[in-house]
Image (cartoon, rainbow, N blue to C red; front, side, top):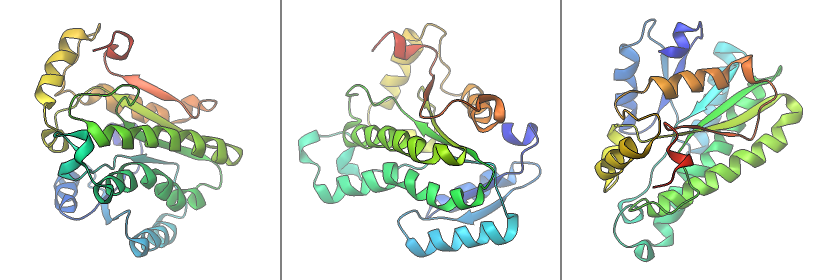
Length: 230
C-alpha cells in the first residue's frame, strides 16, 4: 500500500496455501495488483515467472523478499532434535531463496535497481527461534555476497531487520507473544507489533533512489531494541 501511495506499480507473488492469502491481500489494494505464483523451490516456476515478468513488464525497479518457512521441528522444542532434512528446507526457503529471487529480477534491471529483504536479528540466539535463526544468519550473509556481486550492475541489496510484527507467520513461532511483550518494554522508542507502517515506509525508502550509495546494509526498524539487548 505504501509503495502504491508513492507511485509504484506493484506485483505480488505467493505459493501453495499462501497464494490464496496473497490474493485476498491484493483485493484490499487500489489498484489491485497482479498476483503471480512463485514457489522458490520449483525451478520451473522460477523460470516461468522470469519469462512472465519480462514479457509483461519488460523491466522492474525493485523487489522485496518476504519469504520464510521452517518445519515444526526447527521452531521451538529442542535445537538438537531437528534433522538435516528439515533444516535444509528452512535454509533453502528462508535464505537461499534470496539468491533465487535475484536470479529472477536481475535480468530485468538493466539500469540498476534495489532488492530489499525482510529480516529478523540473527546476531543472538532467540528463545524457540532455533534453526530459523540459523537460516536468518545465512540470509544475512547471502545478502552481503549478493551486494558485492551485483553492485557493479548498479543493483543494491539491503535488509530490514524489523521488530516482531503480529502476522499469521508469527503465530506459528512458539513463545512469540512473550517476545512481543519484552520488545515493547525494552525498545527505547516503544514498539507496536500491530503497526506495520514503520517497516513499510523504510522498505519503500530503501527501494527508492534515496539510498543510491547504500548496499549490503541491515537497517534496524525495531524501536531501538537492538541497541539495548533482550
